[in-house]
Image 1 (cartoon, rainbow over the protein chains, first blue to last red):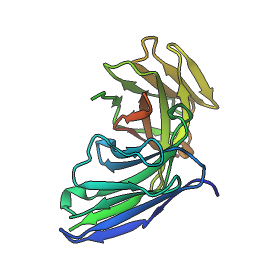
Image 2: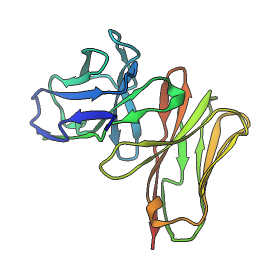
Image 3: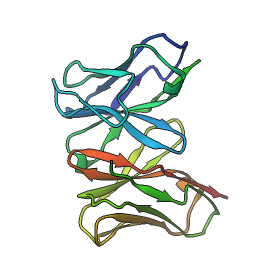
Image 4: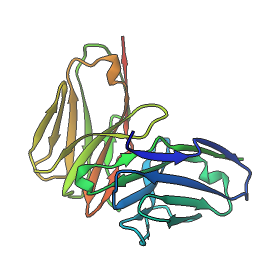
Length: 112
Length: 109
């Protein structure tokens, strides 16, 4: 099925460990996004990529880095995980914002 | 930072009741979207409203965009257990979405 695929679905990290969250879309969308979702705070934008080769900071970029590997793939890296980064992470893609975003099913990350 | 406030934050009703969820901002948005999210899944787009005063209907769901394009409402008629989920509004400015905190709706049989 066409859509956005995120891996892994679940991950537990120790404080200070690093990891990369993977995201791939097969809809030929130009724009891709990383959000985190915390209770009572909605979805907050971490980084986005308006097109292949470009990335920009969102609302909460500290502690994260991203790579737009090609048009399909957009990864999110935590270099040194902290308990405050415990969250559910969603990747999304879109062609035009007015057409809506297509979201992946999320990665639930716990940092202990 | 453009903020979107949703109310109520939580809503628990019985099957067959009607309900309205509100999304308010002090900022003007070019358009606004509503998404529904189920546990363990990402949000799924329900509707986009573009014109001030616009009303769109999706079966038992009615969406309205305020005249000044700063607020929106979602009305559900005769709610069913299948309507249970987290409802999110999102304002569009440029190419980016700003999401509200969401309204968690539970419809009890």
